[in-house]
Length: 253
Length: 265
Image (cartoon, rainbow over all chains, first blue to last red; front, side, top):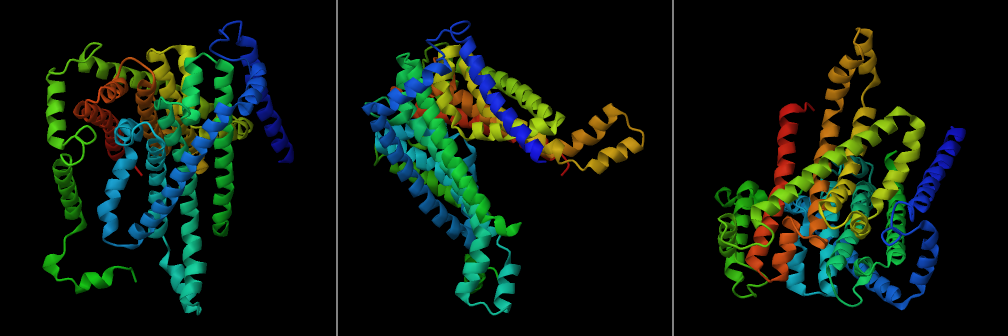
């Protein structure tokens, strides 16, 4: 088993190295370096990018939009999810609407946000919220709905107080599903904010705008540096939330 | 004791509205408020449903002059791009799934890499794609593939991997050859999960194609959405958004029908 794991890791590194070498080899031979930057030119571009002020400004704007949107989706999503999960009447009335909006391609609605808020922080932020809210509320509803009453009764019959029942028998049942929602919501908020920024054509409008700008100006290495940095941040946040998610459902075994 | 039972008992029975009726009431009230309220807010922002309906009729009857060959030409382009990207996404997804099924080692190597790749918001790769492929249909198809292949690969893998090995060996014991095992055991047993993957993959392809058209392109439904919003033609904008949503919902509904009809759970 241990040797298997070692082989897996070595092969994974080989795959990554192969992709890098293949790109390096083909750029300049088959692909114009104007369109595809060679991997060897990326570290320099990343260093230059991180030091530049327009990147720092864009990064700051995107971070602010992302955190505001995510914070709102978490608070409203969990709040509404708890209410809908617990009320017997509202859930069947409102959840079809939530599921319907969740299942349509939300990105086509961005022009409406643009008309409503103009090219602004608010348009990008609310569009991020619009993406992140749904996975969170849907998972919270599912978590509350599927609470097993048997475990609550068991806790009560063993003499647990109301607070103890809530703390030890209700919360641990809801949290794993909510954590899945929080992770999916984070990814969706990222997508919403970045897509919104890719549409917005204004000075200092975040990383998405920096991406389309560098593409339009054929600053290819810089564009790849932006793509790499966004990827790194999203992968990192996803993996972090995945750890919390696994920790939350560990009691189920 | 389920919450919510007590107040229901205290309510007189003739005042009780079943949830299904409430859904419809909410929808009608929503439309009414939208129609009445859009005059108070700006009509540029919120066109009333009646105006959207008439704009929709004008588009369908050819009463709106649309650059680049008319409305149906754009729909055709988008549908072509969606179908092309879906075909490629299925081919790529199934190929990846079968590669991973072929060996445990390859599965362990590729699965984490694919999941990590999936954590990246795919849309940020679009500038890279249109620099390499160009602004034509090719870049939209590539974007659709990138957004659609993942659920197809993962669900095909999971669907076939989770089959009870006993069924396969039972069929073999009874003298089934490879073709019979594949068609009579593996295909029906994996179908529920695989078909769900195909449905999610189609949704990904549709989103990828339409968003790609919106961000950079010169044809298709996504481009029409972008064009009408740029000109502040709000009723047209809403109509095109509705068309895009209809395409997505129709794709989804088709698979739902297929699942209900052919897949035994």
